[in-house]
Length: 272
Length: 273
Image 1 (spheres, chains in turn purple, yellow):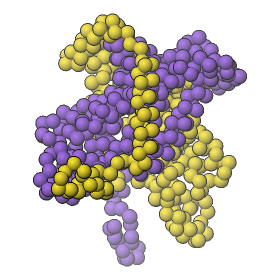
Image 2 (cartoon, helix red, strand yellow):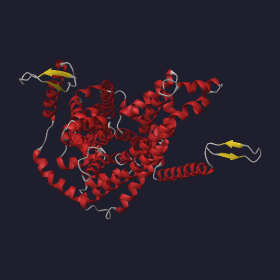
Image 3 (cartoon, helix red, strand yellow):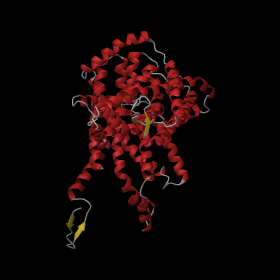
Image 4 (cartoon, one colour):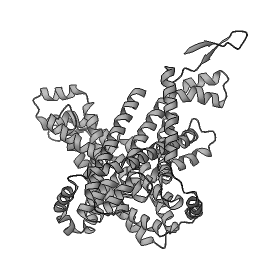
């Protein structure tokens, strides 16, 4: 908090920032605004405005086609919905199984060897950067369409998410219980099991349930690229412009996600 | 901490056993049995065409080997154009999303918003959160036509669900005494927001916005699959045409950019907080 002499009264006047910082902040704002304007201009140039002018009519048209939803179609959706939930659940379970050891390799304080740590971190970042839909795109190519590709796609994306949050949790543990356990002459695995594990278990359970909740949401669209679940029906209905069926699918997805979110919040609340 | 008598050992030494996670054994067993039943049912529902998998393994190997010799050159213009479009979409949609999230976040905070506004804002947030970005993109593409504008609108809408929700939770958790203090000076609603609420939530809002910038870039790489602009369309085409080397190049570029933005934003967040 610098004090600067004001010329008129010759008394120090309080100012929040130095002149330099003030200029810097202005500069950041200026460059940010310029960047935003440039980008919006680029987007505007790539847009077909006659379609946009039409958007309101298109939107109301879409809604009028969706109402009333074709409720009878729901009876055909229970099996895909069950598949969707399975993709999310089994994918999360598989992701947890891979992410758990990976997190121990990636955490600074539990990594067994300095060479393994960057490899584990790279695996986590790679898994995180690629969206499950892209993983699904690749896996459908390799495994063929079906739920298996979906499960693996969800698992591949979950590894990075769970691995990252878990290794951060491991790095934040208290060192004292670890020291106490190692002072009894415990081996490496015993230290992990009695010193580290009890400290991260609540965080681990919370992260896993949270990811499961996200995965339910992700699993609803995997079918668009052929990886099983309710997205297959969604894609088919959109391609045939059966918007009344799309409406039923949307409502079902909405309900499922709501339930899973409520469930995950409940479980996390009970754990923490 | 249960201390149980070890019946086997003759010296009757008491050993410590780890307490079980769920105390009631009936619950424990019920959960285990339920889990096994579910797993059996779930695995039974997976249908795998093994001959198709065998056929695809060769492609998988080809794809993995493509990662070691990615081809940036032959589709260079498509890749550069797609990445630039993704980046511009990210910037524009994040800024618009933040601008929209502030009013929605204020409206969704129970302690400062009246009931009707609260209900409306929470409804919009719930809608934006439950639908995956790709589904929203399908709808906006149907409305605005193919192109990056649909993507920008999609990502801005998705940003509301994330940012406004967290902002509202932040506002609900603020120190209320500061609001009372500012109100006691006779400040109006705007002044209370500006002097009592804003300073308490701004640092976290800035951090979350940077985090959302990351997420929006990652999503912008996907929504192109349904025609909402960005690198996704190029990637989809490359994969459909079995141009593994180009697809691997695109994925490597995406990973590199995500790593760079993540690194930069984590540094910026540390500086802000």
